[in-house]
Image (cartoon, rainbow, N blue to C red):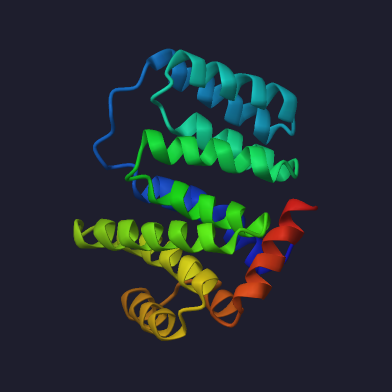
Length: 200
């Protein structure tokens, strides 16, 4: 597997774990358990069961944003991009501070060719990553959000800001892996790698 594919596949996990310390809304425990079951089914390559349990988690607590996020990612892997975009838009509607959701919405919008909508989503995503960085001293949270920001800046082709953010990330983390791979990619190359991951 190419390093960039590993980076893209693990980016969401990194960002979610880095932001785990944020104050979360009270979530129905049944919805959380159903969500966990859905992710387990997904890890076992059982997409139909995973989808069913994501839907059950949503039904148990419609305000809980993570099942929408999981469902959208699953739909992307099934090449159901329009459905995935509707679902991820619901996720960010339920939790507007969910930076990772905005980034996913941008990527999905790009996959269906709606670059104008994608740009709006990436810009909101970057604003939220900046906010997350400002509001913490935790180096892991800062690293995760800077890394995510680099992906969105690449997708927006904002080269000067991308160069600045990459420099900051390198200064803060001497041994960060795979950064050299992603920083050499153009927007088109990054999107093509995402498509490659989906089609594997």
